[in-house]
Amino acid sequence: MNIQVLKTLKARKKIKKIGLILLAFFIVNDVSAASAVKGFIDSISKVGNDYYAKGWACQTGYATSIRVHLFAGGGAGSGTIFASGTANQASASGVANACNSTGSNHRFNILISASNIAKYGGKKLYIHGISSIGTANLSINRSGVHTIPTSTVKGSIGSITKSGNSYYAKGWACQTGYATSIKVHLYAGGGAGSGGTHFASGTANQSSEDAVGDECNSTGNKHRFSILISQNNLKQYQGQKLYIHGISSIGTTNLAISRSGIHTIPAVYPDTPSGLTASYVESSHSLSISWGAVNNTTEYQISRSTDGGSSWNNSYYIGSANNFSDSDIANNNGTIYYRLRACNNNSCSDWTESPAQ
Picture 1 (cartoon, one colour):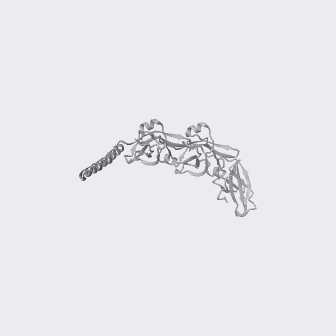
Picture 2 (spheres, helix red, strand yellow; picture 1 turned 90 degrees about the horizontal axis):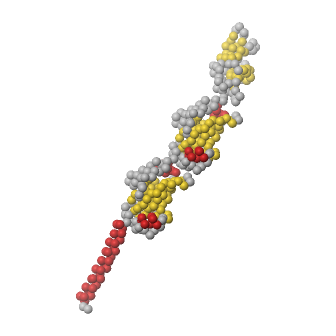
Picture 3 (cartoon, helix red, strand yellow; picture 1 turned 60 degrees about the vertical axis):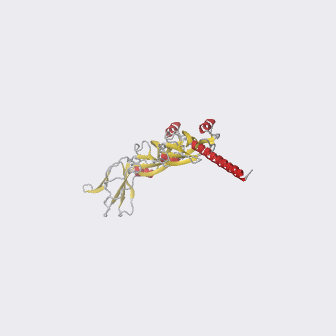
C-alpha cells in the first residue's frame, strides 16, 4: 500500500470520528431541547398546626430530583419568593410516566411557615420548577389556583364574673389555625390606640370546649381565659368599658376580640365625695357640714382635726346622711378641719384632698 492510500484512509477515519462526535452532540442537544420542567400542585394541606404545599415536579426525561421555588401573589418576576425545597420524596408510577422518567422521587411537601402565613396569607401560591439541565425554570401546573391560608386573632369576652370578693374577666381567644395559646391584654375605656388604658395581661390557656376549637379552626383545647381585675384596678377604672386584645402568636395584627366595649368594669368602690363645706349656724352655735351624695355608698365617715391637721379623729361621724351638725365647738377657739370619705361593704374611697375649715 502506497503512502497516498495510507493518508487517504487516515483522513477518512478522522472524518468518521468527527462525525460521530457531532452526531452525539446533536443527539444530546435534541434530548435537552425536548426536556422541560413539569409538575403539579396538589394541595395546601394542614398537618397538626402546620401547613404544607404538596405536589410533584421534574425535569422530563431525567430521573434526578429538581428544586422548586414557592412564590406568593404571582410567579417569578411578579410575585415574592418566600420558600424553596426539593421534589425528592417518593412518587408513584403515574408521576414517572408524566415525567417520562425512570425516577421515583419527584414529589415535594414544603412547609409554609407561620411567619409566611402572617406575611402572605390570602395570596395565591405559585411554584416554579428549577431546571437541572439549564432549560427554562417554569411555573408548574395549578400555580395561581391555591390560596395561602390566612390566620387572625379571634375571641369573645364572655363575662365579668364575681368570685368571693374578686372579679374576673372571662372568655376565649386564639390564633385561628393554631393550637398554641395566645396572650391577651385588658384595656379600660377604649381599645389599644383609641384612648384606652392597658391595665392587665394574661394568657388564654385554660381548657376550652369543642365549639371554641371549631371557631379557632384548631385542634387545641386551651383557649379560654379568666383574668383577675385587681382591687386597685377596680378602684381606678370602675364604670369604664372593658376591651380585650388578643396578641398574635405569628405576627399578624393584635385585634380587639368580640364584645369588647360591651361589659363595664364593676363600680364596687364609692367615689371620693366632693363639695365638702362647713358653715357656722348662729342659732344653734354649731357647724353645719354638708357634701354631695355619692353613689354605691352605705355610709360616710367624717374625720375632724382641732390642731391644724396634725392629728385626726377618723370616726368623728359615721352615718348614711350627706350632712352633719357639729355642736362640739365651744372649747375650740382655733380652726376646726374636716375631711370626708365614702364607704361601702367593699372598701372606702380616699379622703377628700382639701379639708373644710
